[in-house]
Length: 205
Image (cartoon, rainbow, N blue to C red; front, side):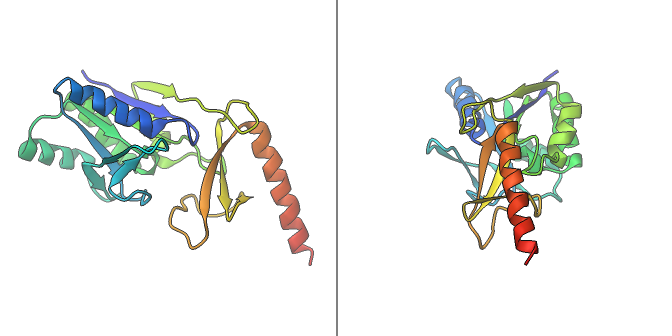
């Protein structure tokens, strides 16, 4: 029986780079690996983009209403067998779609390797990641460091260069400049404290 894998890490931990390396390894051996990605992640469109500058086209771009299992069955019927399924930005998938990925590994006997964030900028879990932590046969942390040099485990959101700690869970397309930074726990609370002080000052006027 194949397995469902969850490889998680903070921003800049090399998730997309690792995904493309795994795809290359399969293809170098004459095997077929396909890449899935949720439409929610509009950054990069129908491509996976590594921070190292490597870009690869996604094979299936799925909305949160679509069945992953049905789409994979259709792919196999139309294009042939699959040796491995790689999933980018898996945190944006819904609970039932994660169940589909588990079912694919177990029923279809296809390894499914998922890459994504565990928590959002407020330290809350993503729906897809929470389900994976319950179902994945293998869970692996991909490590990176904070700007201070400590191990980064959290994700900070910046809007127009300033850290924010309120707002919607997903903010990719925005009229403001949105970016994310991997942070250790110490730096996360340091920036959060400064944010609260700033908000408090603004509310006092």
